[in-house]
Image 1 (cartoon, one colour):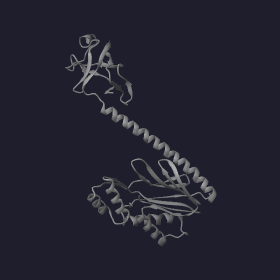
Image 2: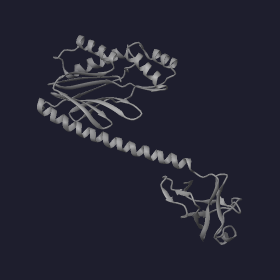
Image 3: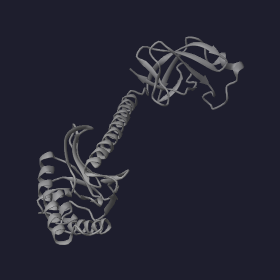
Image 4: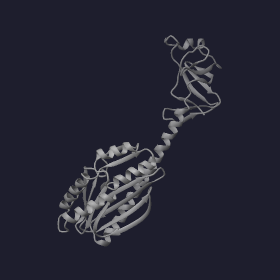
Length: 320
């Protein structure tokens, strides 16, 4: 978790965030130990973070291009999240003129909501929040403009980044406002905004699940590709086109990894050239292929077993 600072009031909403994201790879207990050191303020810069990670056998991936805030109509949304092997927990704030809502999500399911009409809200780890609160008290006044508030928040985040590597130096600032919104209508507007945004999240998660399932299926197919053995037998010959009946436990997939034929079903293959690379003429097909000839894969090459004549097909052949 890094930092998001939001101001909400009668003038509108200003939200600022850093763009840092840190991924930890390694032993769970050591990851937690490293995070505890980081978020307590004991680690002061990137060099110390990498050094401590190496001591604990933890690999780090640090990026400074994450988008943690975004504009949605006349509102601004900020999100921090944490991931486990089973779920993603999200904490979001939606803000606009005269209103904000803070929600907690597990996956895309709403678990908690808090509302208000004004204030300065800070998301972040303990040390970052402490520093932000102190600096805001010193530098911010309610009378200043939204633009200047954004400038102050940006300066504060950059200053915090100099003292803890849990926060990055790259900063986004977004302003959202609608002068027509009252404290009552602001909440209604945020309800509608939040509902639409969660639906987008649901669709994203559904698409992600579908993509992961496709990847899983692709991996399964790849692991079953046949590189040696009997494929089937020629059942019909028309010119240079051969119908081949697959043997038991052999399946055929198209290039999109969709199953097109299973055991004892037929697929189409073609004669093209002989073993010397010379083109086979239709008039000579009977010299190379006959019904009931065995089709095999030898040395990862699809061919007729008796004479090693290569065959072409636009399919992937796999075991069940």
